[in-house]
Amino acid sequence: MWIFVMFDLPVTTKAQSRAATKFRQFLLDEGFEKSQFSVYARFCNGKEQFEAYMRRIERALPDRGDVHVLTFTDRQYENIVRFSGQRRRRPRKNPDQLALF
Image (cartoon, rainbow, N blue to C red; front, side, top):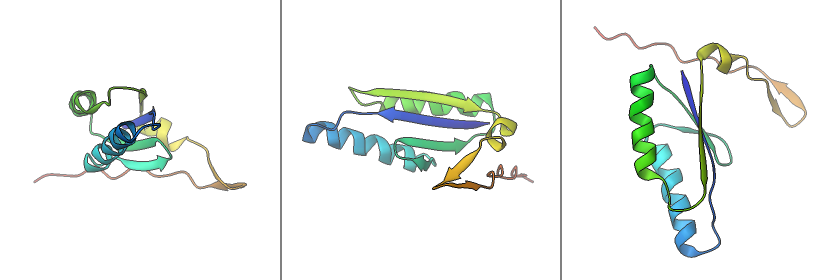
């Protein structure tokens, strides 16, 4: 399953700008990758891991602004159509599952 975090945070004051930067850095530290400006994505291994990320995201929310969290199944993620400029990009592949011995 994939988690997408999309946000629109105010940056009109220095304090707001710092809060937005801190939230973006939090997402990167949690293993999210920047997909687009203010859109970050991360693979997770199921509902329990998703709920753990949701609790951490909720604790890191800035005081102001809007944050949306979406989930996609592996199949839905693979079916996302991507364009770069005016060229269609290949679909991204899901990461392989890690096997622990």
